[in-house]
Image 1 (cartoon, rainbow, N blue to C red):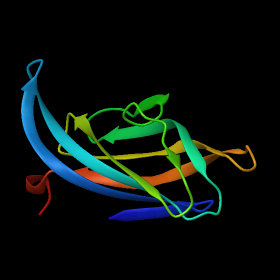
Image 2 (image 1 turned 135 degrees about the horizontal axis):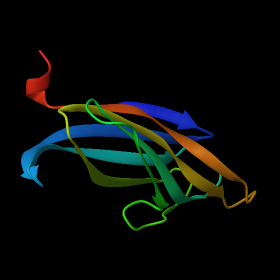
Image 3 (image 1 turned 90 degrees about the horizontal axis):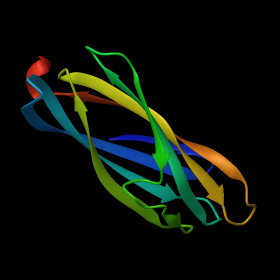
Length: 128
């Protein structure tokens, strides 16, 4: 598991290989990831949007921006956490993701970024 703390917000990431399949006559590798956002600060915060950089060993960088995570903009009170699971399709059996969440501190109304550490994907058969 990979973890990182920014301004009292701890991000933990666990990845998994979900399998392979053909789509549009090309082999794709499916990976899952579970992210836990733990509020270790003294203020309530809300996740408003996300930014992802997706690296595929065979393709160029893909950048994705969007509101919330999986259709939600969770409010996380001090001492609480929010966990969600999502996925990623790559054209190769090896890749990585990194990014950040845009957050709002409800006490100070400050907007800030919480960095998501780089986490790697690899199909079990791709590495010795």
